[in-house]
Length: 133
Image (cartoon, rainbow, N blue to C red):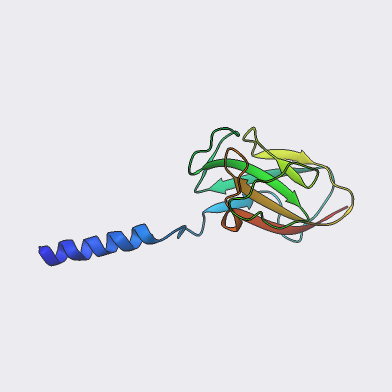
């Protein structure tokens, strides 16, 4: 019985020490894909697995909201995401929006951040390339 308890304890410790082992955790573009050619304005649908989507406010671990970053990569963990034309905040907890961009090629990064817009880092970001007609 002691060996069984020891074995189960080791398995428990190993599983607790792993971070984000679920490949489905993270953010996702739900209706557009890397390489798509789309017309502006377009509907952007955003998803997140492994975090709770909520409006901006007092930060809570495992909670936050989306940001769309245009032609820049992910924001490093711990940094505040600024608000400007290239950094679109969805602080009301939105999971979709109508986005207008001029014709051209774009890198679109979906970045998840906490209630005060502090980035969760590259692990909670996804970048795709699209062409706008």
